[in-house]
Length: 231
Length: 231
Image 1 (cartoon, helix red, strand yellow):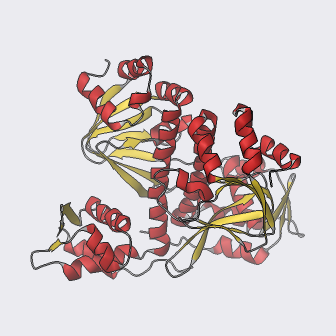
Image 2 (cartoon, each protein chain N blue to C red):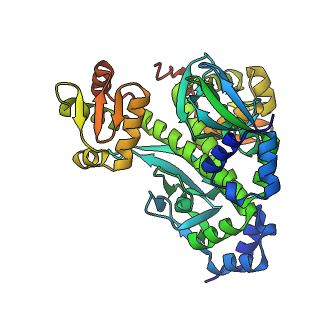
């Protein structure tokens, strides 16, 4: 069943290259893409042999993770509404030599642009090729952030300490990310990124100009954590 | 000074998009690129504010690393002759939000295609855009490999053990990567990748159908290392 009008409008809003496609290409995307529902816990894709296509998250939350031989999982990043999952189409990219698994965290809906359709777009449109590179850069940045946290493990601790020290008696803190960044001598982006991570872990709830501490125990644990690796 | 004939031939061999550039574009690359020499230890580029352009390694070896606030370095990957350094042109890519440093390990020569030249190529040529995505995918794969080693830390130990157990009295082992992979129940690519890493660390020397163990002490240390992180 081809996509409905609502889904097409959604794709037009989310995909920056939409306006640079030909009518025929837009038609192909609309005809061949499908809206899929994933109950919480269901896999969107599982490792290297699974290459369904590009998933555009319509609602809910998914996470991508790697898996050790012993079955241990490590989350790489989370995707929310309007985010796009590129690793479920990694077979169209040369040189991707690692296995990523993606699963719905909450009940989620995602529009699947199938691999053959996306491949054709990317091979014929400079805009789509550039967009693919940007997606890759974003996920690369996510992973580098994780790597630095694991290797250097500094800023999460400092920020958790800061939040605990500055919150009022109700566990609330009135401050913009800009103000916190200034106090901590870092960039706003760094603060925003870490706060979002804290939020995704249930440690804080963010709203405009205010941060609510929602898991004091976890925050205290983060604040007291020593650097894990030295060598 | 524009590039000489030798350097142009080298670029034509190394850059897969060369044949798909226009004459004017090839002319611009030849006129505006420069051959640079880096003595061992010299930086090719240093963090986010340094965006000279794409370096094509002509000879020698460079390494890219991240740097903690305290000045601790962690090597992400090494580049050799015919490899291309993309992070020295990261300002042309949206969404790259991390800082990488690159330095010559040995005396090295590299051809610099300046940022404005490369930017123009990428914005007008689908082949260059695709190539940029491939470079990014390769480096992404390098970093994921490193991350998995740090998090799961398994295969280097197993392979070091295997090499020590199977080498003859002269520290030599006659086996193809395929054969080792079969013996260890993994893929040839995994073995090749780790052996190249061992070689870059001076632990082995690879030649056709043969592996020479060149640093028994380091190999033994790797073989006995326990998993560093559990959580």
